[in-house]
Amino acid sequence: MVVLSQKDTLPTLLLLGLLSVCCLAELQRFEHAAKPDGSLSFLVVGDWGRKGLYNQSHVALQMGIIGEKLDVDFVISTGDNFYDDGLTGETDPAFHESFSDIYTAPSLQKPWYTVLGNHDYRGDVEAQLSPTLAKMDHRWICLRSFILNAGPEMAEFFFVDTTPLVNKYFTNPGDSVYDWKGILPRKKYIQNLLSEVETGLRESTAKWKIVVGHHTIKSAGNHGNTDELNILLLPILEAYDVDFYINGHDHCLEHIISTESPIQFLTSGGGSKAWKNNIKPWNPREMKFYYDGQGFMSVEMTQTDVGFKFYDVFGNELHKWSTSKLLGSAM
Ligand SMILES: [Zn+2]
Image (cartoon, rainbow, N blue to C red; front, side, top):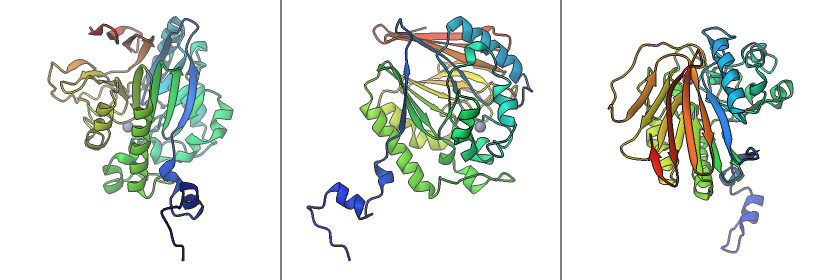
């Protein structure tokens, strides 16, 4: 029997296996340098992997054109990377058919920082996380949750694995089979994840704090708000002055502001199939922009200014917004 005293140090407890190392884990970090002039630009697309169908190829073409114009540093994928059921394994040709062979423009040959969506969890999740995919296409950076330091110190991106937080995939999966390897026990996974995100946000000294997840917090789209994220994640974002929450899941482009916090809620889920035509009523003072069709978003930032734009499948600019840390927000 092991008898503990108050003199037992943390390393001793770890050695004895009495404190799990998982509780002390930190999210994996990546660094991405800004351009020589100190600016940063990137594109955001979500809900895309349909082997070019449902206008995926057309969105990709326009991403290439805008990507070149802005000389983007990277691309963010908000998840639901491969429809309908993720990848079957590391050798699933869908990886090439829906990703490598679609986003072929020179401007898009940059890192793709990617989270998983609920459809990705219907396949072999660990295949999408595997370094084998990154060897096949060096752009592919997909983890469950991670932090990207850009600038450095200019922007910190917190990529959050939101699917395990959503109850219905566990309690009412219907005909879908989800791959929960690495997630169970779920309660512990969620506790660790939220604690890691909170710690990262608390310690962040970046000018801009951006959180990326697949599921919506606020959305008037087909899926609407995600209750679990409003209860569990939103209070953390509000407590640590997050500037933007960026998601996919609803197949639309959307910009919502809150009357309760300065967070901008941005949906970029128009990477392929869209036009769901199921838009919920929303307070017009909060709803700055909603587009039911395909498209994507661009973001340009410096230490003091951020601007984002939404584009449709033809590359037309549909909505733009900008803000400054020095001067306050401005339309
Ligand atoms: Zn989804």
